[in-house]
Length: 121
Image 1 (cartoon, rainbow, N blue to C red):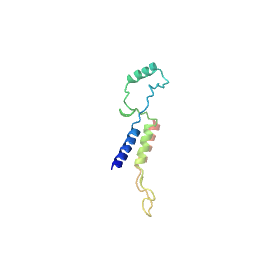
Image 2: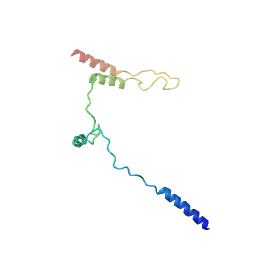
Image 3: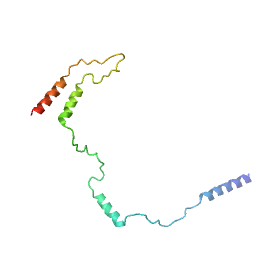
Image 4: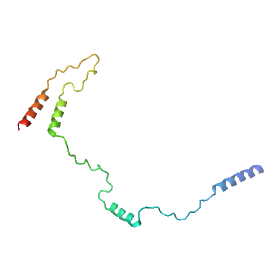
């Protein structure tokens, strides 16, 4: 029984000695910077006084949009596409079927009338 106590005490002392190692003090580390202290201070002052410094782009709504397309041409194309017969149906939509367009095309008549009116002016 005494030997088990002696072995346990020896094991604990070895663990305590291993865990008691301290770090060495290297002193104050020198800073590594490409800018001088005044340059850093000036940059901090500029950043602190900048307007909307904590606002990310687009967080205050949409940015202004400038269209490059002709609005009349875009509208005519939208009308023609919306009124196209069987626009969502293709030949393979149904088994053993053909797409036969039987719908009238009133949009084409309107688009041609609008184009004729704009060229006549």
